[in-house]
Length: 261
Image (cartoon, rainbow, N blue to C red; front, top):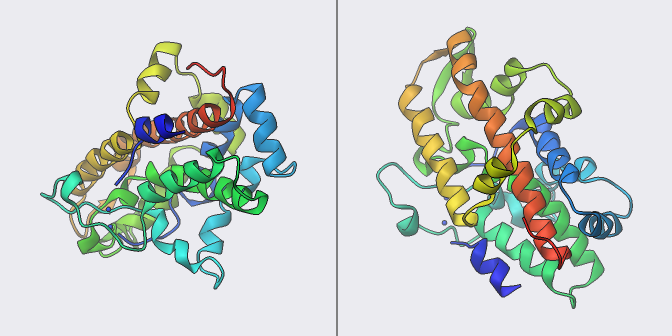
């Protein structure tokens, strides 16, 4: 377990809207389901009592706004402001997406964990790994992850975070989550190995690089239209795929001793 935590490692802050919207989280969870080993799949099915990861993929967005799970509100994102090094970013004392993923891995990998704690950790992990791959959830604290950046989307007033949440993915393809998986889940073994390389901090840093590109290319009052849909669709596809493959990798590593990516 310690090797997993170190190889999938850790450390600090924006604002949580719905990352990727429901469709994005469903796609991420479904890709992960398709890449679980039989041993890991049996373990996940047992923990979720027959419900799929897709069923629970958006649960945390609602749960975080309830009294019982309000403590998870900051777990959907991690902020690194412009010009700030990842390693030096101020940590959120309430936790962030990276620390939340690490904590769920510890719970899931601990045979002494209570069943209800394990089940909750699974639901949280399925969602937050998706959040880790949404660029604006790795955005700047100063603009609340793009929520304060006013833009137009095909002439409609919105903000940058909201545009990335659902508008761009839905404009990219009018697919169901199963169709998304069928169309984008085609990485070669070599490509999959490259996606799974590194650790959780490395994955967060990769998303932050994309966030920086989004900020540079989307100044305040931009009117996002066909050009932006064409520009960002391959990135969205890539982030969905990475999130799903990495979620499966985490679970396979925890539950299948024979797993070798």
